[in-house]
Length: 133
Image 1: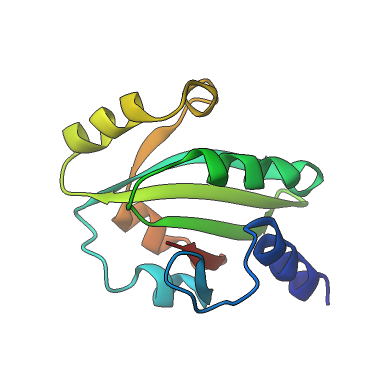
Image 2: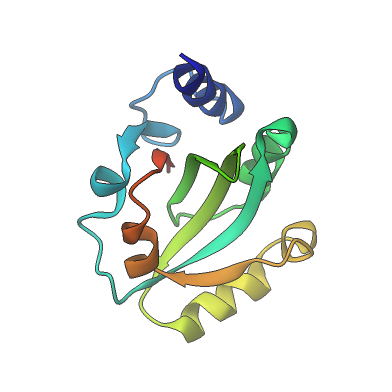
């Protein structure tokens, strides 16, 4: 039951009234459904990881990241806490991802975004995902 409420909270935080819209959430899914089709040799940027108690901050970060790149919000339980991680983009190279970090708003860059391969993201099987954009 807690898991359902947490997933609904992420939907609400994202401002999604319709889970299948062109510019908003396009759905809740498993790690495999969200990332399984992506090339594991490509890269993404983890821009934020927050404990559940600070989940309102997720909404502000999502709103401040502009552009057409996809955004995913991952939810999982780790070390006794519920965590939200926001990852951004699908980049061919680390250099492209590094360039995009420099383009992020200053408040997002201050949180220390870092590059992850999709191989790493795909290996995390205990995550529920909402894809935005």
